[in-house]
Image (cartoon, rainbow, N blue to C red; front, side, top):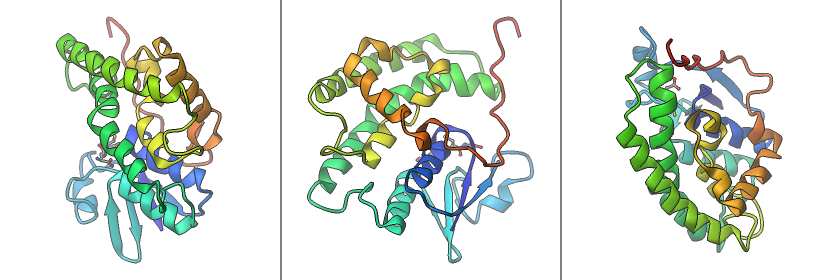
Length: 215
Ligand SMILES: N[C@@H](CCC(=O)N[C@@H](CS)C(=O)NCC(=O)O)C(=O)O
């Protein structure tokens, strides 16, 4: 199995899953949107985005599908397979529409756009993202007041997916600390080496820096 990745949020998520599961697979740094690279990656993913998992001549894209595949390969219940699978899918689905979406909106303005020179920060979109963040964070805060993880009593892919953008919070500056139980949950994730530094030992250049004010 080969996982094409970069240090950006969704490929980071897939690398962290592989690492958390302790799988020995090939990792290859990819830049499908760089000049001249599209033709190489289009047959693997018509969207061109990463992560992409290639196995036996077939390619699988979308970080959640890859997490499911990797979890099966490891024989793990990181991707739940029993009674609590619907519960896990509920959190993945809700998260992508709500909490993860909110984090993505703010990170895109403050992070991705600045890193890749896509345009100035749009304060209205930051504000809209923050509003969504507060609404979703309040729901998670109530959840984590009584539990350590989203599904049952152990880590699952729902936790990793929900946290997709939080490793980039130095840049996104989402007010996580306003929600103490949510912040404690994220602290539990950061205590996992696979989540904290999934790229150890991998050949992957750092992300482009974000120019400071006046740059
Ligand atoms: N829905 C896709 C999103 C994939 C995506 O947006 N990938 C971005 C990074 S977050 C990408 O390919 N960026 C180009 C790069 O990192 O070079 C997934 O969950 O895998």
